[in-house]
Length: 286
Image 1: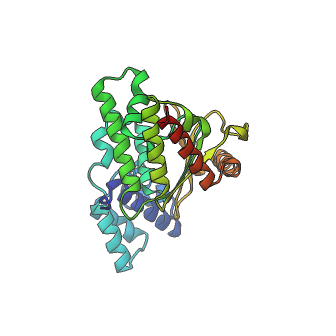
Image 2: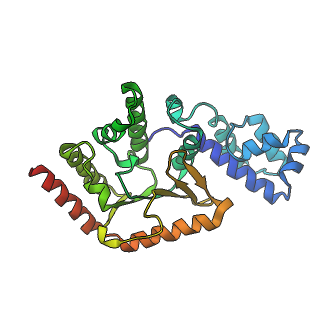
Image 3: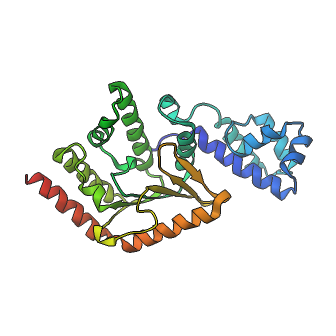
């Protein structure tokens, strides 16, 4: 069953619609805020999707921007009503940094997700046993470990279950599918899950072999999110996490080019799954 629309997605719909409507009206943020007697910071928060929008505030902006089509007005009013309330990850607030929470909001709205990981299987695809083994060296409490893993698995469910979701491409370095996180039994279960996910229609899994050599992102993992109605977004995975989009087009272009290069160097889909299957079979034969 497809999960209900998260409030962050409605905030994003309003953010894009109101920004485009203001630009079509030829108004700056300062000018628009002055005409509806808001502070400019309030309008900025609305246009960045960090706050919900009341129906009365929405109507004030739509009137200013001369958005009068009844169907469009109704659609945006429904989005405003649905923009309130916590996002699905809010119950995990103790383990979700503000940067990662912002990223999750974007990921929930993306129509494509392209990611590369050089060291381990990414969180999107992990089994519970693999995730727990990966967290073990961090000396987290049992409760905190459980909460982190629960977050990963709920994120996984929301991305892959149901009839709708992003088109995803995961390129895993050969090291990621050979490193025995948690031992051979845990890795074998993890590799089977990769094979299961790869059989789904919106999921592509490729392996970058050791023979591929060096490339731009040899030392780090990254995610590229694609949107039909907004700039692509780059998320660099490290301790603090960082995102960039239209504000750093040069860096975004570097990683887009990097991903294309990695895809050219990676094994084909069939070859990748054959390799994963062979590694899993070898583990089971021990």
